[in-house]
Length: 218
Image (tube, rainbow, N blue to C red):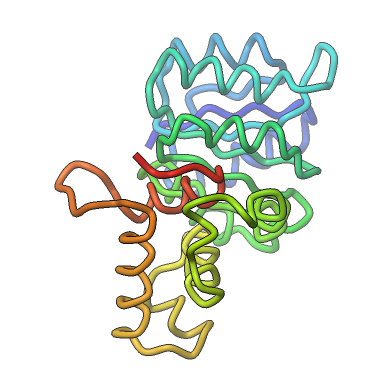
């Protein structure tokens, strides 16, 4: 699995490279600026990019802007944001195209290597990996959005855990629900978000993206 990394802090960047390589990833580029990130993503077309938001030269939003531009040119390019802060505008823009393969983790809330590696793999495979704090910030603004507003409190809990990338079994354990109960809630969520059965679309990912972006799913 080919990875591009963008991180301006040298020690952290080298640590990420070493960690990913130790788990079998092929780090094809490790850069420290927004322009270098965009060039690397377009050149390498990686399976996933791990991106800091604030990069040289201005330390504002170069990382996200480079990632968003790369996703515009390479549809569905998986991007995992690794940031110090919840940047709501950037997170929403990343989700806005409705494509899978997105994640947003907070650096100081990644507690172990396995959690991070699992998130990288999940995003590379087209799923989502969202920090609960990021989810909470996005949902605060979308609480009354339609059709999201039609979800019951329990359905919202199930979908929030989906956004974190949890399986049905893990959701059941967290909420003390049976597998059949989780399946029923999931089916209700898909129905309320207008996600008909399809062989082409991952309804789970589409539901999460609709939920976080506050829009009706396609």
